[in-house]
Every structure is written in C-alpha cells, then in structure tokens.
Image 1 (spheres, one colour):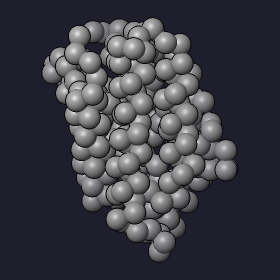
Image 2 (cartoon, rainbow, N blue to C red):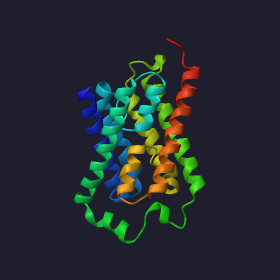
Image 3 (tube, rainbow, N blue to C red):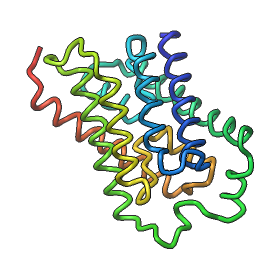
Image 4 (tube, rainbow, N blue to C red):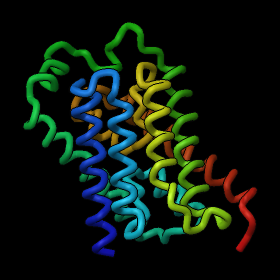
Length: 218
C-alpha cells in the first residue's frame, strides 16, 4: 500500500498546485480549465496503473461503495490526498505570494462575491461531481472498457469541461481535497467547505449506485 499512498499524495499535490496557480492565482487566465484538464490527464496516466489515480475522496468513496477498494485502504487514501492538497496550497503561496495575499486582503473569496448564489453553486457541484465520478467508474471499472487507453483523457476532459461550464458559478471544485486547498486560500469559508464536501460525496454515492445498477455482474 505504501507505493499507492505515495502515488496518491504526489498526484493530488500536483493537481491542486496546478489548480491554485492556473485558476486561483489566475496565471493561466481563461485557459485555466484546459491547464487543469491536461495536467490531470497526465497525472492519471502516470499514476493509474499503480493507485487507480483517485486524487479525490469522493472518487475513493465511489470505489469503496462499488466494492473495488477495502475500507482501510480507502481511509488512508482520503488522508494522504487531503495532506497533498494542503501542502500544495502552502507551496503555491510560497511560489506566488502576491495573488494569494490579495485574496485575503480584499476578501475576494467566492463566498464574499455579490454574484455568488448558493443553490446554483450546490447544483453545479453535485452535477459535475456526478459526471466526474460517472466517467471514472465507466472508464476505469466497467467490464466492457477493460484495458482501454483513453481513461486519462476522458477524466481530464470531464474536469476541464466542468471548469469551463461552472467555474464562475461554484469555483468548479468537484473534489473534497481541492476544497481543503480552496479553504486555505480563503476562496471558500468553512461553511461552504462543509456544504461542498457533503454534496460532492453525495454525488459520488449517487453515481456509484447508478453504476452498480446497470453494470453487468462479474
């Protein structure tokens, strides 16, 4: 399990580092979703054969519910990906302190925006987390897709699509580990962190049960 946990930590670290610098700090501008999707695809191809490349506690919950991962391993996965995202948040603040300090000084987090609306944000996080987990289950676990070579591209593309679609509505997290980074950078507050995390895990569970109901039994 050691190799899996190291892989999950490194993958999540670089996933949130990419998110924080390209999107939160704004260095990639309008191309941030593309940078995130491409980076995630690369990380998945590098890691999928070893750890299944979850990088996301909601995905780990889905693997557990579909009986593709034991409880103990799932718990450790959640711990290391949260640690990876948290460390990446601090690393990003060292790399580019000015934009992150400006967010704090100007109270410009998502929850402070006059245009932010909670219900559209919650719905956005639910739907695109469902889409993400649904794609992952079908490209990584579905029997008829076994051994495919496109799984990383499919997952990276659905994240990029979600970020382009609802980034301005919810921040396009789709990931409780990413929520940790956003909380550290004060893009979301503790209340929004709890709401997002709950709705993302719920979306993953719904996607899992739908997958179980239609996937042929082995």
